[in-house]
Length: 179
Image (cartoon, helix red, strand yellow):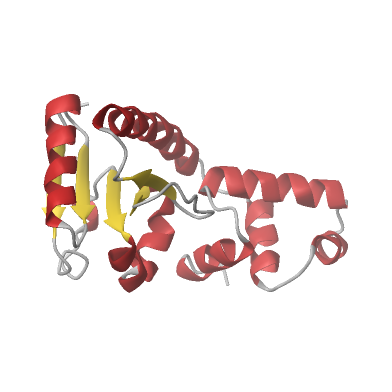
């Protein structure tokens, strides 16, 4: 995993140092602690494999992290799940954190493979209509397909984009010029 790299963006310096230590010592991964200016100077050619961010940094830079939700892990103080982002409780013991981080790398590889498959033209059409606020029945009527086919396209969209909510799909469509 030495070709992996991680950005840690948190206001809690001790958490950042601890996470960096886990990445470097347990996984042999380069982990960089970033400050709030990181987003302003972001270079897409050097995009990391994963971002670990606290809630303050996430909310302050939501437009940056939403399109990168598959690569973003939200650091939390409890085990409250998030519909849109994977989470990591910083209060867990070290072995649990290492096990959870290990699953992120496995999932991250699968997500990266899935997102490299481009959306089909029909999936883009369905996404455009979802972003326009259409319900499944309206999408089926407009595209002259069955509701089951619409549901299949929606399932494929959420799988490929790793976005579960309608608002997330809408934001993705806006950010990528689909609407």
